[in-house]
Image (cartoon, rainbow, N blue to C red):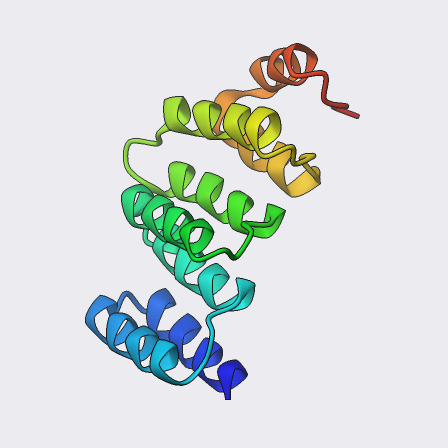
Length: 136
């Protein structure tokens, strides 16, 4: 079932086994409809490796299939920005703006903590004020 595929995909993605992930994802798509958990595992696996491009590509593909990217998916994408060397604070800031303004998502404590790690507390407060987002 899809839960089993999601579990296997998540484990392989976290282990960095991209070829295996792609094969299992294709197999899942032949038998089931991927869901938010499927894409979340793919995005998070890329994020854990610091692969911002792959995480972003999976999120974009997720949305192109009609599965809405939730806050968990966006938080994983932001996490990828902090895992890459050097950290991509510029990309994180752009993603945060897009997430709030375009997608209408309200950041949670995970979002803000991730951003503080990348941008610093003062900059996150500035962004929140500019986007009319409650920082506290």
